[in-house]
Length: 201
Image (cartoon, rainbow, N blue to C red; front, side, top):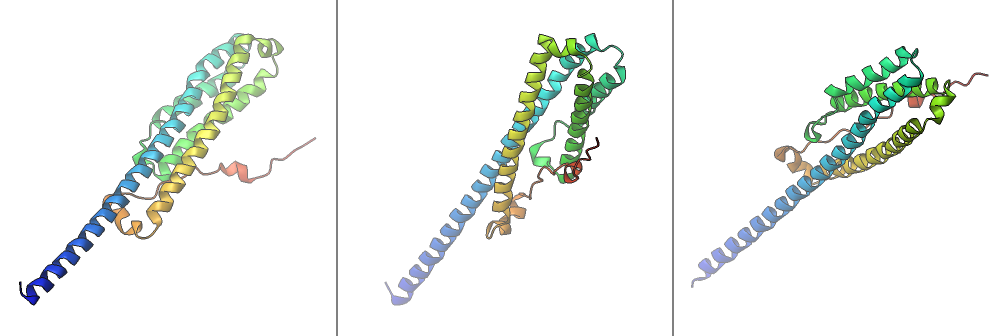
């Protein structure tokens, strides 16, 4: 074999090795995109599950309160309406989780939280209701669900953070757009949480 042929084989081998290394690297980057994206989807699914659990508890809670507080129609109606508003925003696909859609989701959930807080204020007026075992059980379930919501939102935020960090790093950022992996939205703090509550005596 001539010296030129040997050199040609070596150059071809080096080029093939470089192509193979690049292909394996791109495959690994893509697979990491998929794994992190699935982690975000799974976390989002859990967030939706706990919010749905809260929404499912509300009709029983409203019915229990209704039996004791018949003339509190306005508050009971506000809770029912706030729950009804959730219908259009609760089933957001994790792959379509834009900041706008997440803001709509949060706004609907905040409306329900506010209505539930007003309901709990009403409950304070009815000692018999507060002592009712069914109400106590529902209230405990609701409190447990609120804790689960906080935990699942935290896990979702961590999954989104890991995903976004990976997508924005070099060299992944070169391939993210090409493969259709975009930065994902976080939950935003409620704007009212930035203002200190006013206490009046």
